[in-house]
Amino acid sequence: MKNLKLKAARAGKDLSQDDLAKLCDVSRQTISSIEKGDYNPTINLCIKICKALDKTLDELFWE
View 1 (cartoon, rainbow, N blue to C red):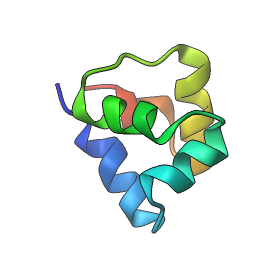
View 2: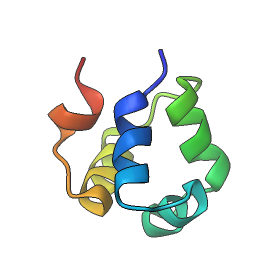
View 3: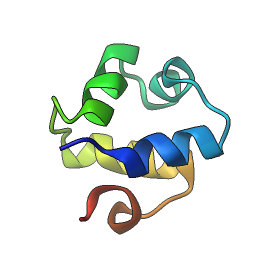
């Protein structure tokens, strides 16, 4: 399932996938895979993404 909430939050912060990836110490491909729903990130990575985007886990990763 695509993570459109993550993509929208990233765009709302005017960050590219590469920008977010650098903030979270992962590759751009990892962020792309999460947004496409091809990769299920670890809880630690979810937390890093949430902190970088000023969002909660519920806002980005809960249906």
